[in-house]
Length: 113
Image 1 (cartoon, one colour):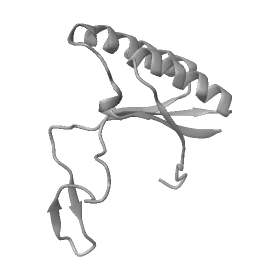
Image 2: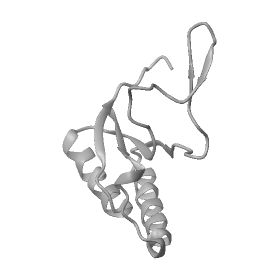
Image 3: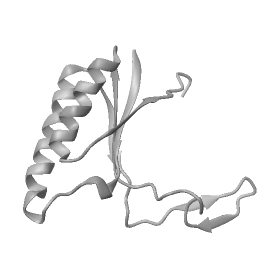
C-alpha cells in the first residue's frame, strides 16, 4: 500500500468567521473515520505564527524559507491506501469538510525511518 499526502494552502480556504466551528467539526469527523478505517497515518498543519528558518549545511541560520519558493503553509494529512481511486475518495471527503480543494501526491515514505 502507498502513503499519500493530501494537503491545502491556507489561502485556499474561503471560510467565513461563522463557519470555522463547523469546518473544524467536519474535518475532525473525517479524520476519525480514517482512523476507524485503519488508513490514517498522521496529520497536522504549519504554525503560521512561527516564521521559517533556513539552516545551511554549515549550521548558519537565516530567517525565512527559500527566497525563490512560495510560502509553505496550510495543513496536510497522510493516509495509507491500496489504490489511487480510494485516496481520491478520501481527498474529496477532506475537501468537502475543509471547504477547499486538496492537493494529492504520493508520499515518498522511507521504510527505514
